Length: 262
Ligand SMILES: NC(=O)c1ccc[n+]([C@@H]2O[C@H](COP(=O)([O-])OP(=O)(O)OC[C@H]3O[C@@H](n4cnc5c(N)ncnc54)[C@H](O)[C@@H]3O)[C@@H](O)[C@H]2O)c1
Image (cartoon, rainbow, N blue to C red; front, top):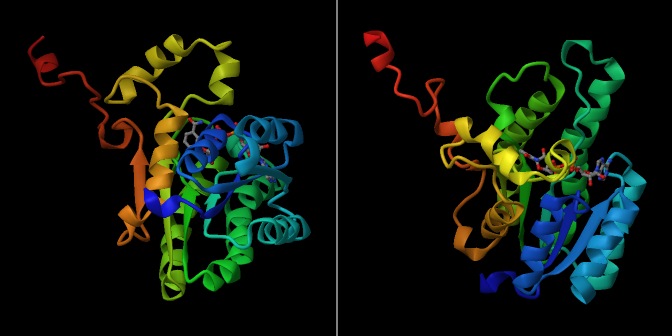
């Protein structure tokens, strides 16, 4: 992971547990990290924890002016941009009942935000002779989940977008990949279970081969790997970081054939 040292990375959605873990992992490998999020209090708290290698820049990925400010401030402060992690997301989703505005919100943050951040960073990556981008897709991109339309569709779009970006940015020396996390210990799980990780693991166990939720650090390590020289021939790919969720069929881990004999 020597290739991460001295590099500059922008992480959107860095105020989250997963985003903070990604930032921390880059910092541990010697990168400078820009934490970009609309959550000022949360983002500043992460920046304070990480120390001098990290800077929080309040950024709204749905606003071009805000994106431009984030990228130009990064370049001013650190001299360029090498990596971009598009992690910010909206979970606004009421399935069939979602309004047109809800659709615009979720697609605006998750898909269009990813595109516009990429567009703004690209010239700076070209100036550095190339770079790497990691987009956040999800297990939700490939399966139907009750009452959820917007978020899964946005994540499926990101998987396709990753392939499009990878092709068109290859000539610039920019690799583009995505990660698809399974259930990962995050704000929403923390809130819903009042911090009960054992309960979260128990609920997740039947549909994750490894019988638990992922740790933010496990997702973060995959993101850093995809940016490193160890992944130099990987582009246009989606890496499941899901404890086997996507490889598990509807029969889950329960022997089904014996049921015929009952
Ligand atoms: N939590 C999981 O189990 C899980 C599973 C699969 C994929 N993921 C993906 O991991 C990523 C993080 O998920 P999470 O559950 O930690 O998310 P979260 O809801 O905790 O955080 C989303 C973050 O994005 C920021 N954000 C929202 N709108 C923004 C905007 N317009 N501009 C800038 N920042 C904005 C929020 O302030 C917040 O910090 C997402 O891309 C999500 O799709 C999460």
